[in-house]
Length: 106
Length: 162
Image 1 (cartoon, each protein chain N blue to C red):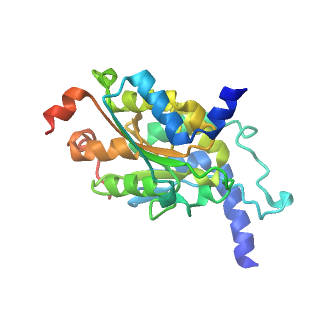
Image 2: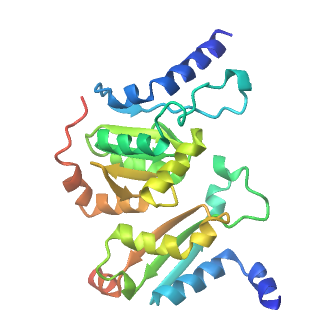
Image 3: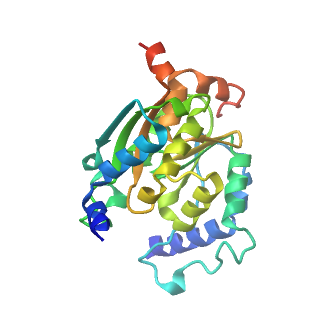
């Protein structure tokens, strides 16, 4: 009961962080809540007032992305966050790189 | 009143000639594929009598045909000239860099179509872009492919719009 209470209080951003961190062993994990940029758009108007966390920018660097194309990397993230997507998370902007790619691009 | 009637007529035609729209070979730059809108203002009596299911065309067939018949197909929020979401807007802006016909459906008009597309691609968000029958991704991926030259390569053998 106590743990259930805690997870209710935990923000969506924190839940996203822990889910992605655990599964992807991310070396870099940046999560920006950009919901305010989308607050006015059509689909958001029906949203209940207690669901403000709808849009996030994610930057994830993970060795698990090695050998996966972009569609597969995005699918991995969407799959991990399927509970969030079905409970009011509306859209993600995802940058998904491998550790190798981040050092190569610098 | 005239507008009201023509609106009903238009919706009726749109629902019945869905396949005709799709197989039409006349490109004029952007094409908007019409779907039946679930207009909350219209009285039940005026709603299109033929549902997709009863007309023998399931929505997943519609999606399958869309992506097969249209070399660049985007399911988006709003229409290309008036996107109703920043991500859809971005995807359209990227695709407009290329001289290819762009076919679009507005998933905000049709919640059933929206779920059919999600089920077809197993992808939870919109926009969704299909090129030459293959699911490509959403706005992040199309932007990335534009920046690294993959999109140019993928689109180069598509006949330019007339």
